[in-house]
Length: 398
Image (cartoon, rainbow, N blue to C red):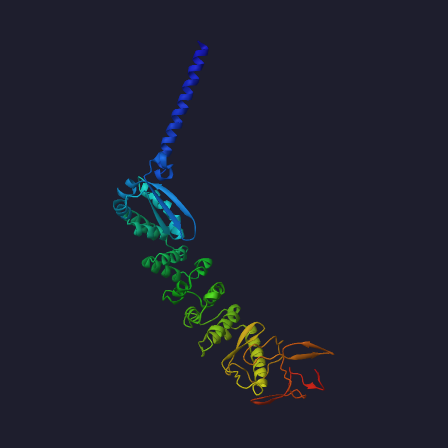
């Protein structure tokens, strides 16, 4: 009797365990949407193949009755199932929309209409709601975006809204980016398209310190150097919003101005603002370099007819410099810098004598140069002075 009682007790406990497992499995099935289960177990009657524009394909086993009926019905699938009785369809979506498609299906299959939205797929879910004609999803996602759109998330929403042509969302995100430009995520702003970034800079809501703005603009130009144009540079460096340039960025922005804005002149020009940035290096360095370029060009102006120095651009130590009469000082500043190279319409290569050997350096030299070291140009002879050694007897003194 004791052995029989123990056997019955063990059988009862095993039966209780099985009931608990079945109950847990039943509760689990209630929380898992049917489309996530095996197609045969869920009795799926339709397949949706989603191809991402960035690469990758996913197939979803869905149910016509859920997608086309009820409070979360989709007008797109109602029309599709009515006109096309086929067992499957194919969709091609942008990367974020393809990532948001499972969340969209979870919402359609949810008995409570629960939406697990996040910032990076918020705009994509709004696009899906419009595309598939799901009014319930549209209301839910709009309520989520209103709460989630802050200065931290504005750059992400701005880029995504532009991708899906959501004009109202794009305008709201752009305004938020402009109002909180100094605090916005710098890395996210750099990733914006050139048209979106220029819209923020041109916005009347932009509030940012001039020097901080110049640093942000310089970083953006470095990241998008291949897309930089004269129109873009003018749009993102307006004198009214950027009257002062950060000293550390003055040299870089000056070089960009020379390359893309050669005709821009005047007090408010980008070049002049860079010169006024208070960077002693750029002011001294440019004066020395520009004087040296002018010296080279004047020395060659007679011998190389047809090559004018006005309106051109020459390279000095890897930096492209303008050759403009209103920027060139008349007297040579001291001491002269090392002259690396002059590249342009009147480029020259010269030699600098050091001791008994002749080391190759770029300097004013021409086979017809007189032995006394004078350089005859259009403005007359330029005699050597401090910083320019005279040539006597074929050797350089000084």
